[in-house]
Length: 278
Image 1 (tube, rainbow, N blue to C red):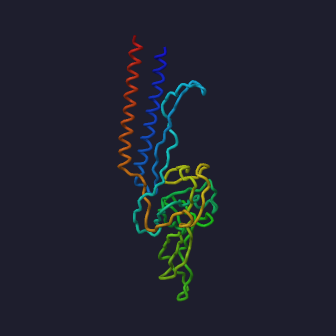
Image 2 (image 1 turned 90 degrees about the vertical axis):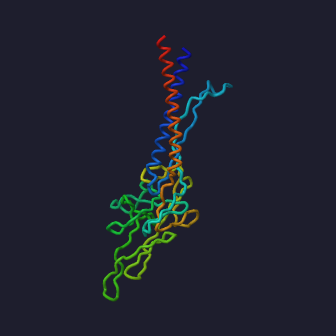
Image 3 (image 1 turned 180 degrees about the horizontal axis):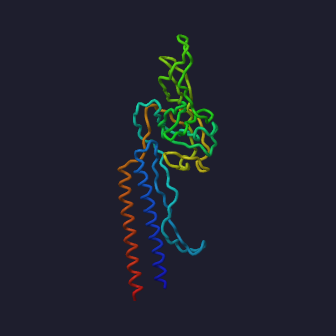
């Protein structure tokens, strides 16, 4: 009877190993799949050992009972910068996140629950001149309000007609300047970035976007180059920080661990069958 109990425990321990390896493979596969996603931050699977002892005052050493998975840890290391020469392609060099608001048309004020944070700086203008990301979410500036860049400037004295928008530029401190006509330059917006005390506590919601949590703390907003916030590099995009070579090596190791656990499980099944046949 004791032997069958031991077999049951072994099955449970091996099962935790299979679950852990399977979880690790899922995290690695997601990293590889998003290696080409702008602003993507890779994850690292995390595990904890399980132990069992008779009671708290026991002098008996704790017995290992397997492993359990915990929340994957995000790596927020800087990704490489790719030159695009796009005036609204922006990369953050250093700490900080772009702040995205709720979809336009639902009001100008964005509640903390509706804000999203990203390192993906691929922006463009919509038909109304709002600065938005590829999913149509507005980039927020001072006061956590959407940034709008008018397509028409002031009327000229020569012909009384308004000048058309001809160029947009963003400096390292997040100031947005628009050129109307040939040489009329006007500041039309200011980008604010968010910084967190514990960025590893952010919740990954997909598409290289994150939500704040109690673990991450409340974001601190500021212009680029303020305090510990990084600067903006216009004409560049931050790529994923996933290293394909490292991830493939990790995948091979994890597959070997999975196969090893599978062989151990099969051996236990074979032993159980032989004992049951007696």
